[in-house]
Image (cartoon, rainbow, N blue to C red; front, side, top):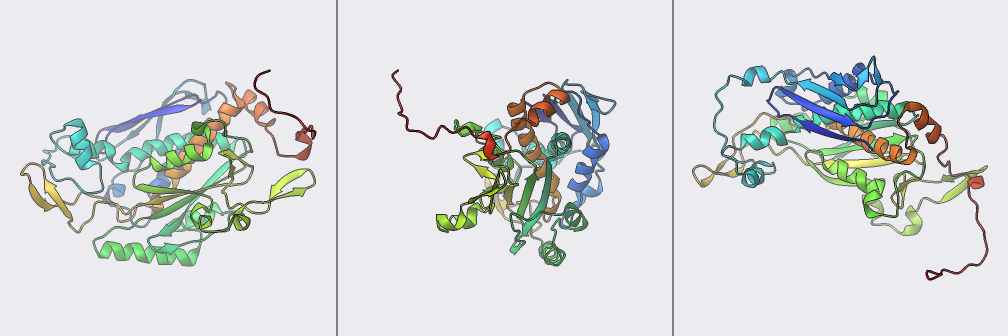
Length: 389
């Protein structure tokens, strides 16, 4: 229903994005999009690049007077660092960094310099994906759907949340590491600063929670229409992600079924769940509970401490040369995942509702099942299954 394309290199003139399929009539605010980009640049563990860039989005098509027109939305984000690179004599980059796209990407495209790979493979690309996701998030908010991301771990320091409890976004934004717990935030910050002192890097995890998503979004009838699977793929597409968890998927793998199933209860006519261990999904479809997805990010592969590699020009073993990077990118990655989640929820919601404009979307949105007992028309009588009549 909606799709996007991004272009641009890390140290090139700009990042470009085109988002197609956003219905007409929705408010799209540059200020809202820029707030996502600003959050992406903040956090303990950020590298020197964030002292150069002051990201803001330029909307050049598809939004007039702050309202979507139904046409493709074109976006630009200028790279300030381009001024430092456009006339620069670039040193040959011939030593691939383990863990990056350097080695395999150079082999795949037969490049003569590794920089052609790292310029596009860089997480700088996520700035445009963040802006595109922010558009989806703003549309969803007009439908009563909100997404809050937070840091759930840095290295060995973890924050455990009850999946039935709500995360307060202001507590996340007040924390320098994006964790809603003040005491655990301090421990995480100390761990990051220690890694920087030791010329090392740290990974961690980010959990995103979507509230207000109606049930029946997604489908069980085809493997590629299961929304939890689609979201897992999208989360995995972000740089450094090595694992994705839905709900308490990792913990419940070691428990009995009677301990983890989200049993049903009735509140008047409304069917509720007494827990949310499965993270808001059943059979690849949303079930009306909050959606919980956690992405696990490996430590950034570029370290100040050299690691073993190969000089592809001299054909001999050597050690890596440092390329500017973060000590820990996890805190400032929160809006990236919020945007990724928002995009896919909106995409699948539009597949459900159809419609080319806000009026049609809201009308159809209000008719989505609320999982109330009166909606079910059960025959409750014996029948036979035949395929040859």
